Length: 184
Image (cartoon, rainbow, N blue to C red; front, side, top):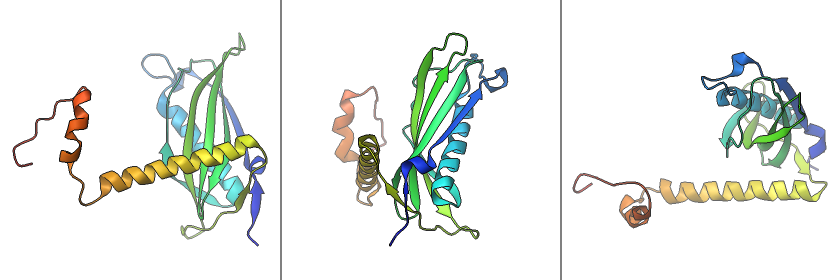
């Protein structure tokens, strides 16, 4: 019988005070720094679930919703939303808190696909997932839908018979001008 683990058993939370050295030229916390922290927590969460070393395979849906200020406390919460054979989707929520006013902002939610590896770098099977509540079921289903959409997009645009000609009419409603050489 396959090994299964509860979502709760691999949840991770990370908090860090944002310093001036983390800021960009506009005085806000640099998005790249936040992405680095997110990659760290995704690794920790996936490794905790799989009990092995993990690598980042992809990052989906990185929307920076609100800026993070110097001096704010950033808290990231991560959990396993989906497991495949060797991969896991880690959902991450990023919030910032003004420690003087206690005001909190949702800054980002993102999804990191992590792959479990053995000591020689070969992908290995991960434990299954036990879903304990409606939120966990919803997150699992959302991960499935994101994967289906990604697969369909790859099939549509990555097919060897793809022709941009089939889509030119769709572009007329967008702020783009297509100026291709003849017979292209």
